[in-house]
Length: 98
Image (cartoon, rainbow, N blue to C red):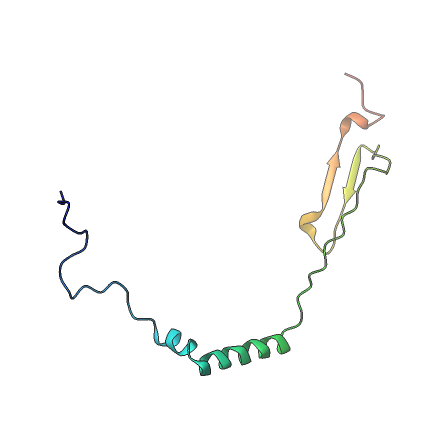
């Protein structure tokens, strides 16, 4: 246990608290490094196309008639993972009643 007058650190003077920054960090902090970084960011803005930030269009289905078909198939050729098939046998008029 530490006494009231003892400190939590070692008494050795050779202990250093932080490591030196990497050479690239020291270069980035200089005026030449800041100017070079700004030039490269400007070059990136000039070469890369602008990002498409338009919002997606969402359509509400509340105003339309519901599907009354026993089988509904929606295929999306551009995105096959978005294709759906709904099978609702209880809407089939030729199905025998239980």
